[in-house]
Length: 480
Image 1 (tube, one colour):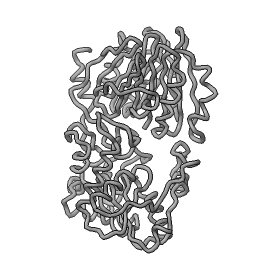
Image 2 (spheres, helix red, strand yellow):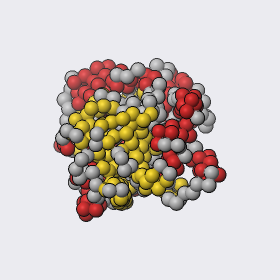
Image 3 (tube, one colour):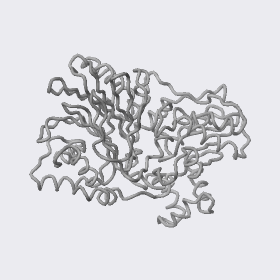
Image 4 (cartoon, helix red, strand yellow):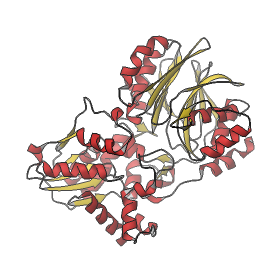
């Protein structure tokens, strides 16, 4: 994924921009960037954060970041922000995006005699593409509508201009943006925990498809919201920092409810429950109450040097890091039967290694409980996991095994009451090498979040989603 942060102030913004952006470090592993504007001059700094903390890379740059308005990004993809000079004026833009029709849009831009100057991992930088689509508009509002009409996938972005910051949320709201205020100063962020310690208080959530201009004098709506929303359910399940709220709903509370729902109906006999750090902890605390057994830390995360910012990109190294940063507590595990809660199972390789560690530490039996349903479809909207194809998902591979080398009957495997679902879960259990394995149902997830099913994106579980391009074109056709 990635995380965005912006500051609009009547005073210097560098310190708030630095710390607010840093608070999004759990959302990205590749690049980070800051941009400010001072008397019409754009300042820009971008660093690689694959092997270092954000703070260590940018602390020496703060004296260069003059101005009272700025944007920052923790990026899991391309180097950004991008600075553009166009008929709309000079501006900087940073994005959270996944563009599924990149090739088509590249060709369209080139045919209009536009050019690409930035490369990202050997291809066009997605943020530069968004900038070019914006500049195709008559003004910023028209350019933002052009982005919404053009993109297949998802995109939320911040645009830093000499007048203020434009904050535009994905047309279906799959990724969030929220605004906080401290006196006359404003912050805009992907996650609202990022500005709490800076003294800002949340005043509004930007709606799906909405774009606003934030200036030192207030907030003005540039583009009206979409008439639909499908915010990513994994923000609550995994991505979000525990104290973050999306649409006013706490990530930690949702995880607690998912654990409580699982515990109330689980018939396993266990001595205690543990959470696999970090995103499994909230679920485990809820499970302990729902089941009525103690919560103990049977496995712990070594945080001083193994933060997520150090996660390498190749799978072999990722597996090693996943093992090195988690340490089992043998004095608690030895001879005991334990439940371990986790957010999800993607490939299954890391969980298999973790389960092996637990047995080697002396656990008598290990029961894995997952807060969401099995992942049957790869995410096409958020770069949810490192999995590039559906067949890297362990649930998908198990379906292929059960169906004799074919992918079929997916509807039956998505139904948690069906025989096919039970055989798939059993096959996953065997691959992971655990005593028992259970997943929460999709109904449990929606109940815990508290939004109507149609307002939450659940594509990775059930394959359902809106065609964002068609929706945007139909809703915005009056602006063509």
